[in-house]
Image 1 (tube, rainbow, N blue to C red):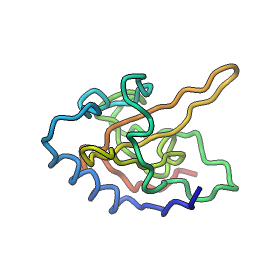
Image 2 (cartoon, helix red, strand yellow):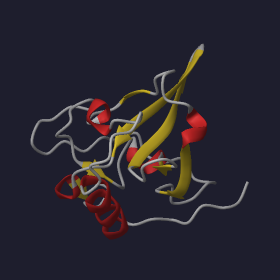
Image 3 (spheres, rainbow, N blue to C red):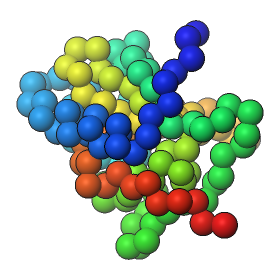
Image 4 (cartoon, rainbow, N blue to C red):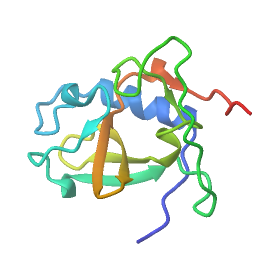
Amino acid sequence: MADLARLDADQLKQLARQSAAIVASCICDNSVFAGWGSLPLSLPENQLEDIGTLLQDAYVEPSFVEYHPDGSRYESPTAPVAVHYFPYNRCNVARCTLCGRHYLRYVEAGGYFVDRRIRALLDATLVSDAPLAA
């Protein structure tokens, strides 16, 4: 597997603007993924192509600290896409191969399960480059 390009907040905002401009109907209907959720079986994983990553260093464990300055929650569609915070600091950015919309993806793993999580990248105003709090 080829190394993915490291994306920054400005690049993520541009991808969000591109996604928001797409009006074509597609099986990946991004309105379903406005907040974090499990990748549904109805969306074939091979329809999503990873184009970049937010992971800064594959050899350093990213933080599990979340960023919710306005009181949002992890699953909220209005939660900031804070690139230095969990879960974004573990995400790859994928593009739908049929319509071109962009998504954030990571694997939630714990105890006895693995859950592929997905969130649509559709609002550039939610993207934050806030530095990780010490």
